[in-house]
Length: 259
Length: 220
Image 1: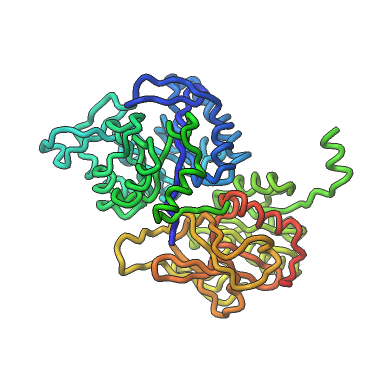
Image 2: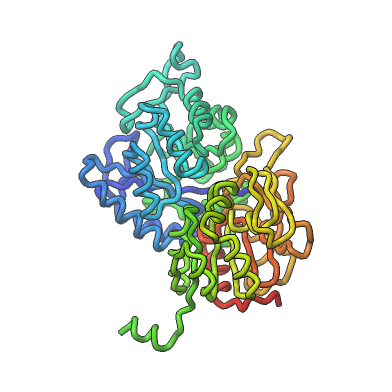
């Protein structure tokens, strides 16, 4: 039986680790490579890096980060942020990333998902989606709307529909980011996660809102997620990865303990 | 100074990685460096045959992999290398194609170990294909490659097809996914192959790779 995964998310801006609250007020909080190594040594199951560098001129910094991580860390890791073409994806894979996360560019041009799946395999193609709760309307019957460009642009696209379409196009995994929960540490959006996990046949990574170990328990059981993404709660040293996994184990969630 | 000491006091084990456009060559190479193995990559059958230790990695589909392997003449070279008795490590797709056949596509495989590959199919909803993630292995043999690895240890899997060798003694470890128990490590004499990605399986994966650096290619 598969273990549930604890995934650490590192937002990287101009080569530095950064953290936002509800996608704004971003501040730099350290060196992403040493943080990643610390989590790896503490039993982390997977890493996700998002390049939130504003200027595309500085994207090569991310390639250096990816390469440094790949030389020291031997667990799966994916990279997202600003990936628009297969060439972008290939550069990151060559630098050492294993999976590629597409987000805004895939909403604008859904074929990007199938192109990636074709070129690098579905298992390495991750669709990351930023979701905001809205009033139920005809465009968004679930009340969950896809938002792009770092949470700034609502798309009038239903998140559950988009999740299904992404999986059909070849995404091998979905990362579901709740903008409402991001950085709040009040808990994941369980309802959103569960609706998406029930709608698709690919693994779902829940993201946004983790602040207490019980939040991970909830989203991995009630929320039906395959993996729980953490950021603030480990970046600021409030919890360690091993403590989170020990807590999950105590609560009966199967996790990898010997590493 | 440091480099000089290493070179003069310790002979760095060298390993050759077979390149057939199978994706994860560089992560395997980096994992080799991390355990002190000097890894060269080759797509040439002649060079492959001169290797002391060979890693046969792979991601992707068995069908296209076998096509490229045949086009490059690597199929015969791999069989010949195996028959020389030198250590051979297969990873993921590199495990699947050492069997005779696979349900994936029309190509026959290398036929080093009798058996075939089947696609995961589950009656129960909620079991996802491919299997992606960390799963446990149950050891079925005292193979020297296992070293300190024990039953219950977890490794990182990404696959839609699973191996079913015909003979039980080729099954070195098993893993359960849903109601399917499959061979997650198989072997025969100087061949040891893992369905999981040991290069992505953290320290325990690297421990297996370290064992491979020292392995003499015998089963006991």
